[in-house]
Structure formats: structure tokens, C-alpha cells
Image (cartoon, rainbow, N blue to C red; front, side):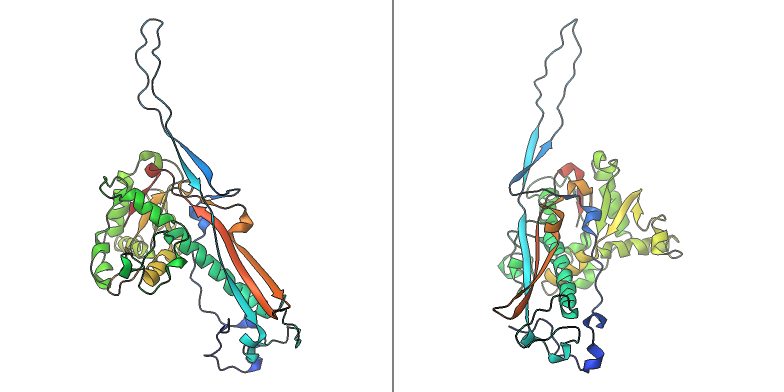
Length: 356
């Protein structure tokens, strides 16, 4: 097995790497906080039911004398099932995997013991594992697909990608597609972004100057008013759509005077008093995993919903983000496990609008 830390491109002396925590890392992308756009529900177990209660049909007629007519209407109910999956990875690490340049003074070295608990090396591996765990959660929550396939096999994943990184569960966008644009049904919860259908990267990103305005306006006007007036609605969009929105505001002299925090009150992060959440991870994942060599699969996306309508379920808070480090003496090897147990559901169609 290759070394967990690839030092092939380094030309440093021991003094320059006294502490791994001083290493310069590739700048992390700021992935959205899941709790900002999803209700996190705990105590969720396998096959636990989610009861959805509908509204009564027509009731209430004129009362004739003392006779009130009984209604034949029933309270409609449907259900969905939580089915949390467990996903994770293990990072094995033994002394021989690591370039001796990285054997730090802070580790108690022994020829018979490679337990790096509490050392700079463990902190380094934990930091990398935590970043990987966040990426795994985002990838599966947004792009999980139990029927995932590569382009060569009739799917949308980039050829050469291992589909087992995606097919653990049906994520948010797989469920959104089923609701917003079902085959042969009216597109009641869907707004088209025409540039997504273009045949090249350049044409896809040649967005109409008012594309995001037109998209949000159409979604707002078409949406069920229970969603619009819920007080919890938000737009979540790719950074490509938000950049188009910022460009539009600048042309209207609304954009360039303020910091990002100050702009939250000017319209850059809201439309018709509904907050706008920018999810950079969507753009990064689409560019990395959904590329056929000439174009991307729906690179511009927006949803309008509420956190309660797209909940993430997990048995407990620890199950959503667990890192475990241990040393196996018999193997003289140290391990870091990253594990999460979770599911995501899109609940009520009328509390959703999607554009892509």
C-alpha cells in the first residue's frame, strides 16, 4: 500500500518540517453548512416511518334546519421511510509508509511501537480525514444515486469514476429530479434553465444577463404560496447562478459598495425577502464528476424549499461525523476511521421548486 502522505514532490530539509501543523495545505473550499439548509433530525433508525398528513377535500355545506350533513371526506396520509446508510473510509498508516523527513521530534519513536496517538502526525491525518468526511457527506447528500451509472453505461457520471462512491443512497438532487420533472407528467415544480442544454462548456456558461433573475422570479411566481409564505423558504443555488445574479445587480448599481456581510441587506443574498444560499460544492462536484468531455450535466441549478422539507436523519449527532484513531500493535499500524450514518429525504412536493 502506498504512503498515506505523498512526499514525492517535496524537497525540504528536516528543519522545515519540524511540525506537520505548519505545513501549507491546498486552500480548502468552503462547503456549505448542512444545518443551514437542512433540519438535522436525530434518533432516526432503519425503516422508521415519516408520516405526511394531507388536507381535507371539500367540506362544509349549508345547514338545513337542525341537520348537519356528515362529510365523506377522509384525511389523506402518505408515508416515507428513513433508511440511514453507513458510509466511511479507513486511512491506514505505518512507519514505513512515511518519508523519514516527516518523523517529527514530537513522536516518541520506538523500533517496536508506531503508536502516533497525540502527535503532530495524528493531527495531520485527522485534519485530512475530517476534510474527506465532509466531502463524502456532501457528495452523497447532494448527488447520491442508487442507480448511478457512467456516461458509457447510460448515466451521467464521468467515465472512469467508481460508481460505488455514489450509489449508497438517493441524495437530494436525485429526489428533486423525480419530483420536479417526472417522465410523462406535468412539470409543476420545475423551471427550465435553457443554457444547461447547450452542447459545449462555453455555451453553457454564456448565461443570459438576467438568467438568475428570470429563474428566481419564475420559481417564486409558480411556487405554492404555502412555501412562499412559510417564513423558512430559501433559494439554494450554484455559484454560477449567483455570479450571474451579482453581475445583474452591478449593472443596476446595487452591487459594488459593500462587504459580503453588508450586501446581505441589499439583495445579493436575498430575493423578494427570501434568503439566497450559495453552495459552491455543487459547482465543484458537477465539474469533477459529471463531465462528458464537452459539457457538464446541468451545471446551473437552483432549488426553493425549506430546511424542514429536506431533512437529514441520523441516529445521533456523533453518527453524522465520527473520527476514530487506533493503533494495532500486532500489525504495527495506526488507523484513522471516518464514519457517518445518515439519510436525506425530500418530503412534500408542494414545498419545493427546482430549476436546472
